[in-house]
Length: 139
Image (cartoon, rainbow, N blue to C red; front, side, top):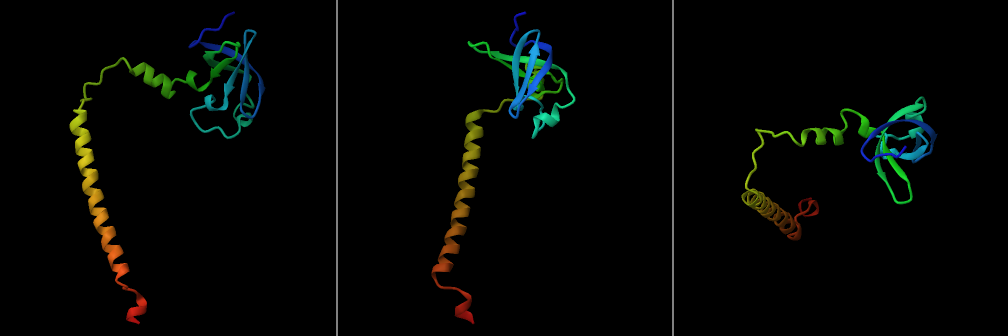
């Protein structure tokens, strides 16, 4: 059976290493990298998959040498990748596009104002230090 990129298959975990898990899908073996195991941080993949034998995986890519990259987290319903694809075709009526130029100019002018105020405070601090104001002069 030829695997199709983007499809989800049922597979069996063949072996688990520190960097991922090898999964057999009807005779084709692919790798689920540790970063594709879960949406949450996975410190030890062996602990995460220790009781799992059969697993759903999504085919991410197949390179020229026949290496198959798989994902477990993209098969989950609430995966960020699945969520963005499901909602990319929906229009959000509350979303308003601002003029990027004026928005950028507003941000830039605010930054310059804040920066100028900080520089003035810094210079005042430096001037007071250079004049020799210290505890030793008053003690």
